[in-house]
Image 1 (cartoon, rainbow, N blue to C red):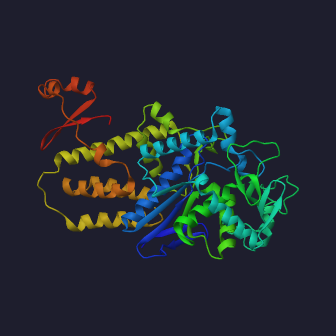
Image 2: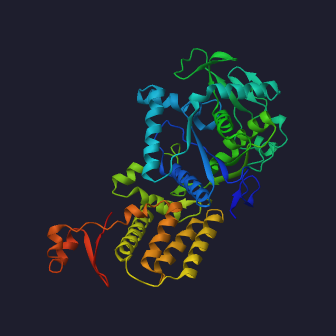
Image 3: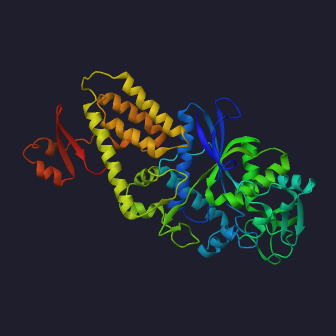
Length: 452
């Protein structure tokens, strides 16, 4: 039995998929106008753990991720510049080339973090027709109105607008989202489709029923893409907590108004990575990229290991000291696995009951709203147990299907250089100077390369 904390209900619920043994999972993807920072990547690691947990439980998962390559305006508002167009001018590139470059960089980063690739990746610019169709449905049903700069969704038409954020319309009107647009009927109304400004020459624009020079709003792409690939409703929708009050709230409003049924049954959101008491973000000017960690000599998986130590619904404070501690912890874990590889042929009695207890404890941890810190503790207890090396290794590799730390690769025993092997006993200090340690075990000397 899996339980997830559903943002929509604000409580843990037993997960029951719409179709037996099958899960439709939609994960909000990046806006590809710049490199993803490690705060962004924390969310994608959480979503990877979610998918791996579902698959560990035997579900067939279909994961869909959008790539926002148009229409995301600065400040998440309906009056700013398009982030792609703005950055393209700054870098003197075409918006199309810019989007391709940063999308490629994003997936290079996720690969380094051992994040499984989505089953389907959908660029917003490829699904323009579906977005136009969705706006037309909303228009026909009376949920829209037109201004000089676009087609807007009238949030006053919905009694439950803001239900995901647990805010009523009055609270939202009095909040920080109020914008100086005299043509909007309500401050919370949002753009479904935008018109290019008079005299403006955009690189990304399309002919639509509302004009020759137009482009989609940000929120419409996720509704169109998720429904296209997963139907409506689908099982799980995820993203960062910053999506709750605006982006996901607006997705729900437009999708449920268009089709008269829920968009998704379970909504899961990951908390921020915190740096110097503030969330990490490009607008805050405090971003750290994965490449910066690599340039400082860190294994990218050390960052993954760091994030596993905090629950996905908890803020995680980033410091270089904490990352260094995580790297040491991961190196120690690889050392333990390599030693087990060395000792795995040692004949010891099996302990079936204890093995089953570790399997049960691990499953209970991950199925309790992805309690990965507890799952890591189960792994550490396993390694300290008196089970045989072979069984420990078997379970560690099984648990790593969820943790994604590449224990099989990291725990390989390094080959002993010939010049070291020939004189290992006499030259132990020189061996250590080369970065190796030699440990005496009942099965003979065990060589370990300190840094993978």
